Length: 393
Image (tube, rainbow, N blue to C red; front, side, top):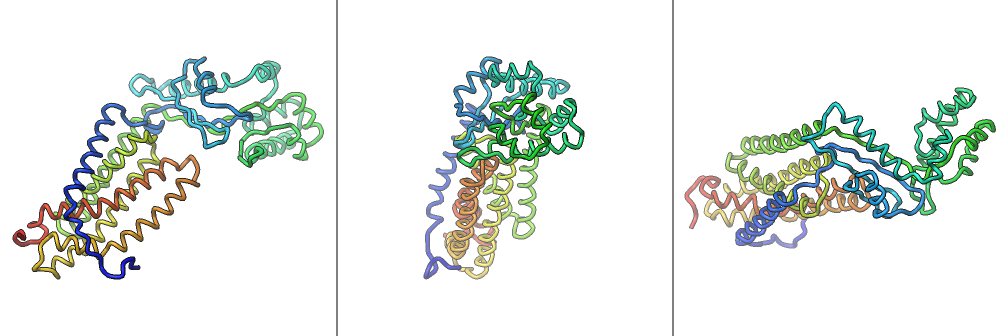
């Protein structure tokens, strides 16, 4: 597919100094942020507790932070899920000080503290009276509770499944899945046995919030994952060097790997600037970027290799500009369609893949820029090596 009526003749190599200055400033800014601020590490790498909590009534982050301050964990990170009454609460463990033998116990204590601090007086009174919170009980807990109240095992199991199923699919007035049951009238629609209905009304209650998910990573596991992620990125780059060195010349491989390092450093600088939480999904995004950027670079290098033979009388700058211009339509179309897909993931894919899609968006833009303004520039610097002849004047 061609975007231009005739072959473009942009002088990309004339802009190489500007490209180096821009990239250099961004990388330096990233290094400064790394020293002064550091990465916003997710619990995958730092160790800690991540809880997704949904509230029945409208609450704000200030209320949550004030509540957490009562139990000494006000430094937790709180993120709202768009405009819903859902929040992610992340607490970090100190990797140096935490005892791996106490990880799970510390996690349980922290989760219980968070759950306790959000209960109102009525809910606390219900719990003290021995009532069960249907919005914060697992299926087995509900089943065992009903069995303990004289309900047959089959009816208890069937009722527990229906209640949990209702909770998972329950929607608020705006059509958002809340994960908690708003009113007992909804349970009455489940066609439960009258005996079960009576027990539920007398001995259970519906809490004002629910834990949709809890995730815990021990500090030692987080440290190991951090090392493995760095190692995976390093060996991916080495593998690229070997592959391109085998397919082309060694000088092409070095130019490609320098470009890939450039891409990773730029993306990391953007992640630092926007305080993006670094998790395993972000690392997966960075590795995806490495492969994507390399693919575009290889297409250009393939054309460069052909043009070195076809344009023997031309200098390196002319060969490189011609090669980039001849693949420019392909670069724009490929990058544009990929970017459109990732933008859709970013805006409509939900909170879970938000950071992953943001990393891909940044990487696609940086990778396209670097394939044009970085990879070929390094070949121009080493003109004699990749041309195999004396440097042109």
